[in-house]
Amino acid sequence: MLNISSFEKFDDVLKEYENFNYEEYLENVSDSDIRMSLKKEHLNQYDFLNLLSKKAFSYIEEMAEISKKHKLRHFGKVIQLYLPIYISNYCSSDCSYCGFSKKNKIVRKHLSEDDLDLEAQEIAKTGIKHILLLTGEASKKADLKYLKMAVTVLKKYFTSIAIEVYPLETSEYKELKDLGVDGLTIYQEVYDKKIYPTVHTSGEKTNYSYRLDAAQRGCEAGIRSINVGCLFGLGNIYSEAFISAIHAKFLMDKYYDSEISISMPRINNAAGEFIPKFNIDDKTFVQFMLAYRLYMPNIGMNVSTREVANFRDNLIDIAATKFSAGSKTDVGGYRDVDKSTAQFEISDERSVDEISAMIRSKGYQPIFKDWEIIK
Ligand code: SF4
Image (cartoon, rainbow, N blue to C red; front, side):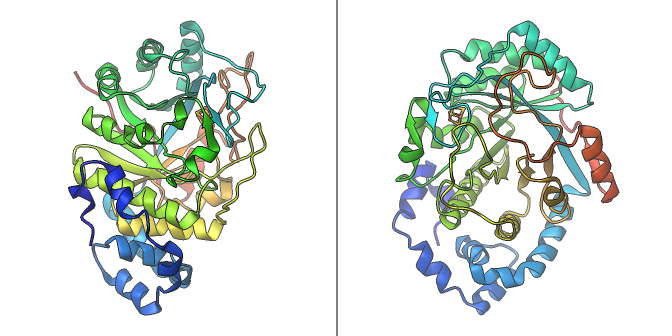
């Protein structure tokens, strides 16, 4: 059994799985393999793969029961809420699945300090205290100085600031952390090294390895909360789910001080009209989410507004720990003035109040604030 945390870099772990035949393994998973994996307290990589197999779908109710218990034990009956704020949609990269891709003729916008302040004030009216700051991959236009300005403004209104921007150096993450950033989201999008260059055809994002190591640099910089994952639709769903999870596990086992979470974004409609080759249906999505929870009982799981309302609501009990609400994916979207083009279409347009009411109706408590840095 591979001891993944003994490797220095995650890329070294990936190399170990380069020639692994997922199809053959998954086809040969038996009922007794699944039953054995379900009985274990600590699952290894092969147990996790057993639960990703098609055969494991017949055990989904059992998986859901175990998952519920893990979730209750580690997180209680709460769902944390956050909102994304897009501050710049300029991008130097060409990602075939993204509305912000430089080749798309869209309305571009870059918030000034004053506009950002007004946008932040609008979001703060919802009561939300956790914010996720996003930019396109444009390190010259939205450079470190710009990011620092943005963090300083957001700090006035929010107690927790996470970033989802282009990959940075450890020292740059440290600078942002020292200013008040406590969360980093960085999706590899697709871990398959053959597919990656076919969907990231030019610009900064073509650098696979630099992106892959970014989460680890974030941990080394001391950022408290790190969120990884793949974008479902770009690569084979089984191998991508497996590698995303062992990436999260690698970080969890190596960096005890960081809280690691995993997200399962699926491709939504956006400018450029990308057609995903590898769809994941709702049932398989749920099965994978449960498999993640069983493999990593204390991992945070974020379900964004890419998913439709009813579907999201049903994930509260079984695995989700974090929800976005009332999200806008266009720059300046919350004030609804002089808007830019959105990154992708939102599937759940409910407001923060509506999402909070739904969470309460399920016997859970919506959490607006669970973190503040005290100096
Ligand atoms: S996914 Fe990121 S890097 Fe790629 S086009 Fe969109 S904003 Fe740019």
